[in-house]
Length: 198
Image 1: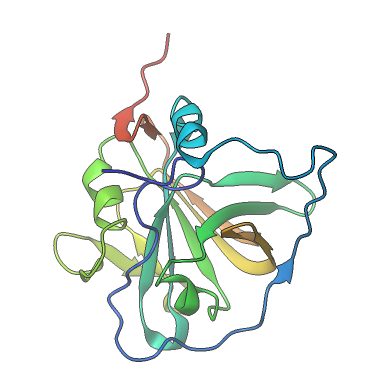
Image 2: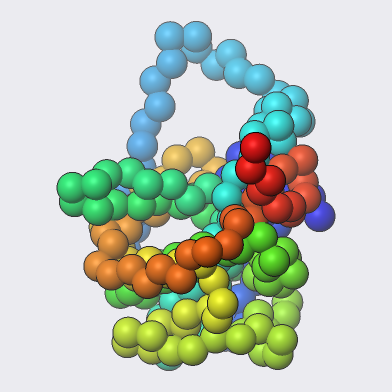
C-alpha cells in the first residue's frame, strides 16, 4: 500500500456514503512564511525521508447526519494536557472529510498490533468500511467505536486549520476508554507492523 508518508496510511477518504457531500464551516487558513523563499525539497524525496519515521495508527470515526464514516490516520498526536487536545491531519482530497467535518463528536480508535487488516480496510476506497468483518458498537451520540482496540478517545472538534494540501484537525477530548494490555500497531516504510520492545 502506498500511503501519504507525511500524514496517513492509505488514501484517508472514500467513506461508504452516497449523494453530494454536505457543506461545513470553512477552516482557518495558515499562512506559512519562510526565510528561504520558495526553496523546498521535492515531494518524492520528502516521502522517502518521512517513510523512515515509524508512526502509531488510529482510525477516526464519526456519525454525521446518521451516516457512519471513518478513515485511517498515522498523523495522530497529543497537543495539550490542559485543556486535553489531540490532533490529526486529513488530505484535502479525502472524500470522507466533507462528512467528517460535519460531526459534532468523533472518536479516535487507537489500534493494536493485531489490527493491521482493520487499518488497511479504513484506508481503502469505495467499500463499506463498517460492514463485516469490521466489528463496532455505537458509543455516545451513536459515534462508532471499533471493538477490541487498546483505547478510544471521544472528542469534540476544537479547531481546524488548512495547512498546505491537508487539514489539521484539533479535537478536545471529552472522555476516554482504555483496555490496554497490548502492543500498538505501527506504520513504517509503507507497511503496518508490530512494536517489539527491548
